[in-house]
Length: 298
Image 1 (spheres, one colour):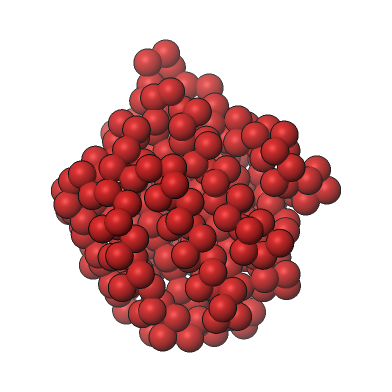
Image 2 (cartoon, rainbow, N blue to C red):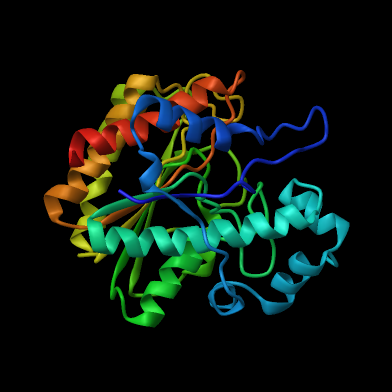
């Protein structure tokens, strides 16, 4: 199982910043220590090209991120101060998503130790998302003829408004989002199927809702699933408002991956959101997705 990473994923942010910029390196070390990923399976995420990014994003917006001319207000909407690292990181996230999707098509499963940047829209970023890695990856595969139909299963606690907006109206992409009803973004964009859950939803009700929704993604007959395995539904998450346990999140990931394998559909995973305090709880939940992958795929 190829797993993509970049040293640029970890962010050094101003003191008191709400985003846990160190979680990516923590996850890589956790996976290696637990034997869930071997050193030979770790691959460097390549930078996305301009052509890759321009399929999903306004070239002027891409250029403003690259050269730092983006307006301060636009960076505040994203939630990070601009830096060269932010630009490199955004390209690596999208390039890694493309590479992981191609590895999944070859091997059945792959992943990236970042990604799921589903709040990025065509001409602006939002919610800690600069470029939209799933939209970039989906459009890269479709344009190259490597896939004809793609399903996105987005289980981050925050609705994937950027996925829905960029990919709206396409008959070759199906977007499923299971998220918190009253959480960010407060102005949702309709996906193909949205499942909005009330604050405080626990394991049993969450898993029942997911089990009811999943068949729609596979009825679409996708050539690949892009799986956003955000762990912010965890009850310890500061930004989540749902109440899943570690066991519930593991069961969620196992359900999705088992469905992919049973249907013979390759799956590429991104880790999505996670904001527990301390962040170790999020990192443990991220590792759980890879534990589930090993349980399902061996």
